[in-house]
Length: 369
Image (cartoon, rainbow, N blue to C red; front, top):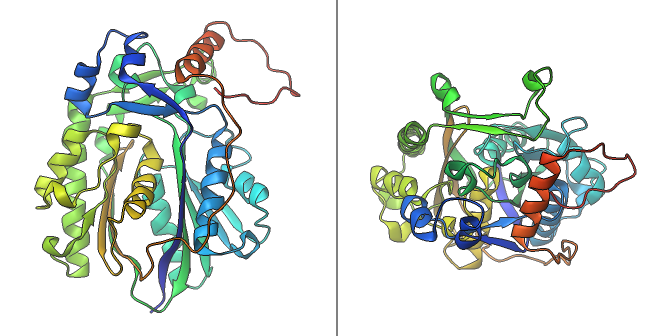
């Protein structure tokens, strides 16, 4: 049977750090209030476009796999915060990489977009449609944030990561998964101002108001992720005690702890970086995977369980058998352009533009949010 091994990985985090103290200068909040409810201490704010973040992450993943961009046959771009919807984001990365032979598709299931993308690319490799794939999870949430709403503004950050999949006869890569959606709860998480339904209502695209029913989202997130973990393990005939590391969606520390308890896994076997980056939506799981590898938390042949949830409300869990290599074959020199602005300065500029929007000339390049 053909499997899809993860042979390369790379992340890209923008350098500007927005601390809880910084947020307290914008909102009626405090470090204590945010940490006690979420576990988040800081997050990153991008000075560049989503495509820039994704391309750097992709170049680093390709270097780790020692695979030339020209050899890539499929790019799956998982996100809900596009620079453009037409043309799609994946084609932009394809062009930037020089991956001329690749098919290119975008996938949006909100925070689970990377994991659903992993399922999609793996299925296409298993069936012989492609022999390899680049799967990206990347988000630029900050331009779409309502920075006056502390219930959501404290939660999210920007970032990107990518993995390379390659066909193999070894039993590794994605072994079992469970995908699902609580569509009856889709109204608990809606970003108003990010779609065509608002075009005739006098709403400027990107000027958002967030419907965010925190308690209901918490309940459904724990329920969905935990049940998906159980089903994925059952499909593979694996006991929770055999799982080496849980790499969950990083939305809220309390959700992570609750899912770990329900999955019968101690926190020592759970990877957590939500305190550094907040919720990067589709980027959280692949960034956490990259950092777990960097920190030596992934062993050759180990079992990884990766659950997630997102708007929709989508949920899933992916059971991955790691291969023999936990270090990159090569390193990329790809870097973001330098940034001299603080995260607060970037946000304040964004808010100012939203308050007094002006027509953007076609020749004007994008310069942060």
